[in-house]
Image (cartoon, rainbow, N blue to C red; front, top):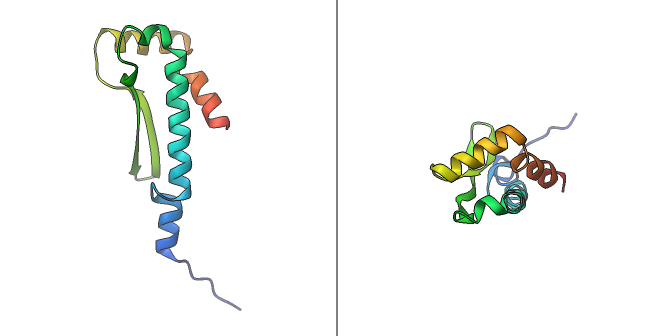
Length: 101
């Protein structure tokens, strides 16, 4: 019977490195979702800097992850969060559409 040897460095690059294929796909999806959130909140973001909606990619206990959200606090960020909680019309559709492709 044969044996199977994993190349740990290659697996790490493949699955956990931002420059690897999974990391590049995660970044692409995070960019798409962030753009969709901005588009869904155009009227609200006219009152503030559209760059307040950002994403960050990091490596946690579960591997690569993207966090997409509103940077900072204040009246407009609180309004954006409350509107999403009430109506689910900004982040939820962006996630559904962005993760689909």
